[in-house]
Amino acid sequence: MVKIYTKGGDFGETSLLNGTRVSKGHDRVEAYGTLDELNAFIGLLRDHLKLERYRAPLLRIQENLFTAEALIAADPEKEVTGLPELTEEEILLLEKEIDLMTAELPLLKSFILPGGDPHVSRCHVARTVCRRAERAVIRLHKGSSVPPLLIRYLNRLSDYLFVLARILAKEFKSEEVTWPRKKQGKNLA
Image (cartoon, rainbow, N blue to C red; front, top):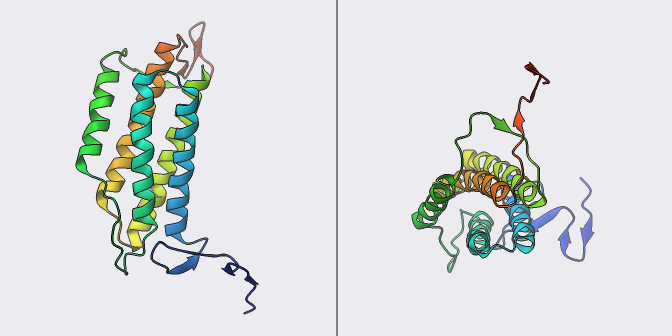
């Protein structure tokens, strides 16, 4: 096998937080990379959203995602000191926010199509990336140590982002387009 060396080390490899070298295609790298992508999308959402009621929780979520990235980027076979923790309190805060927003929304009786307002669309993009991050972390968990709380956090976060999209649609008076759409009593789907 021919190895290609670059100034930073082996081509196609990266280091985990505690120095372990792994392929850039490793499940651990995929998981923390997807969490990083999610964090960037939530930052984009927060940058465009001027409603402080929603900006503050988004900043806290970004901080939690950085914690999650650090936890995933550490080799579980080696000790790493000083890593932050993700706590049950963070899940409870998401659930509280979900409940507060849901109380202001009409009952959802069908699927809704993402879109209607750029803020709503950014929420849906972040939600789908969050679901992908959750799947990546679950795949990693099958063969390696992952804090179970992290999987629960991502699951609740995707629900939070869905409800946030709905409340922002209400705030910006954007119609929620349901699926399947009906026209003159017939399904268009």
